[in-house]
Length: 386
View (cartoon, one colour):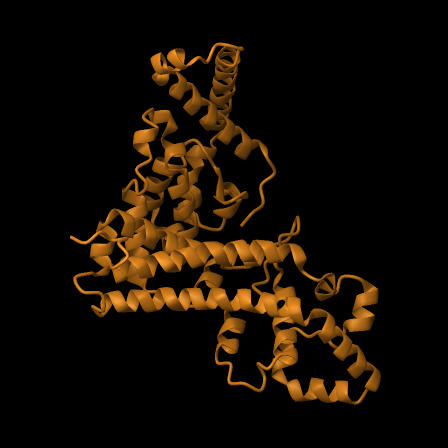
């Protein structure tokens, strides 16, 4: 059978391109989130008084003619509007293109799934791709990356700011005069969810699952991906971490993917107690703070609070005696490996012949170090909630 990722395998190359784009989009969103013009937040009273009449949220779309006529009635507002356009059109356009790429990403993924179902790729179906090792990884990553995009956007670029930027782009660009059919869809996908990352902010009801369902995705695809993540070691990491106590670290990347993807099928979190118990026993028996993407962490105790089945399944992990046991275990491991590492790092100790004779011993120490540091860093740091 043809290698799934061979250059002449159109099915493999198509999903590989989608996943590559997904990673690039998230990188661009994280980059842009550092350069949001402060004026779009309208936090300062001075900004509100100066720009409040020319920066609009989505209420603008209910009657654009009314708002524009108000602007035209005041020459000083027109001058300010023109100056604001010249100063911000470049950055606003870049944000719009990033938002557009998120919508295009999910449209492309849905089209790829339709093509698979319709037999466009000869001898390939959704089931056959999920049986292939590379195909399984890429399909799981494709859905996971879309979920991460949505979470990153909501965490890093507030809903009101997104709306104001989209309206500004609509007003200042050619989008209004051209038949930009995507504008409505992009606005529907990225309208404010009501979520705020400010400390003490209340979580909106049905968040983030209602946000994740704004663009429908093939339900059987979501179900099959969750099934694969529940049952398989898709990255073959268990062989690299042979000790049973390292299992949750070996499967940590997969656990993060499963956490994000479960929001596409929230009924599992709400009512499927057996499935959630299986997931927690496999992935979260000794950890409850996870990294979902490059430093974005989530505390499951908070994130799963609204979901009955998920919360019940996690109770054993969060039991005070288990928390004490895990903390004590990692403290003991840290002391032991610290002594070992100090011995290994003595000058002249790590000679070539010594390394070759002690590879298993050195690898075991490295594994213990990595697992202990990872657990301690995650469970002792302030975590941002997704």
